[in-house]
Amino acid sequence: MKLPQKMSEALTNTMIEANIIKKEEHDIYSYCYEFLFENIVYIASIILFGALLHNLKETLIFLLVMIPFRTFAGGLHAPASGLCVVLSYLSYFITMLFCNNNIGFSILSHPAFFFLECFTICLMAPIDSSSKKMTDHYRKRNKKICIICCILMILLQFFFYFKGHYKFCNILFFCGLLSVLNVSIAFFIQSIHNTKSS
Image (tube, rainbow, N blue to C red):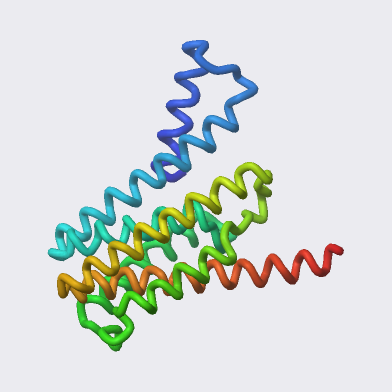
């Protein structure tokens, strides 16, 4: 059993024993707490890696971009939580590798390219999870939040670009690229699935 799962089970059982929640609500609370703890562990470990690798600013920018994109734009979901964890860490380390070595991204660090990425994400987002469909209310809400996040990130990209912080521009570009790929693949899979269903 994973640490977040153990922590969520312990907390949920404590809440049941203290009559804070009902026994029938165990699975819901356990799932939510596990999700919360997994995210806390992921964010804390990524920040720790950033500090150890002397990439703390770059790591914070990575999180600043990827968390809103993942939360409000949606995208592909790994079939197993272990694979999701591996892909999340892999995304971080690949982004740091490319941006620290400036592998072919200096030209693409221009804000116009990031604008195109954000525009693409906003066109397709939000993407439903295959296990849980969004209501119209949440779909509209996530779309608005996604658009606001994209506008703020584009402004941030322009700020970094005109200040000459091209490494930060590269991080934004690469995070945008990962998000576009994620959302695009999920969008097309969903479109094919919807076509077969109808």
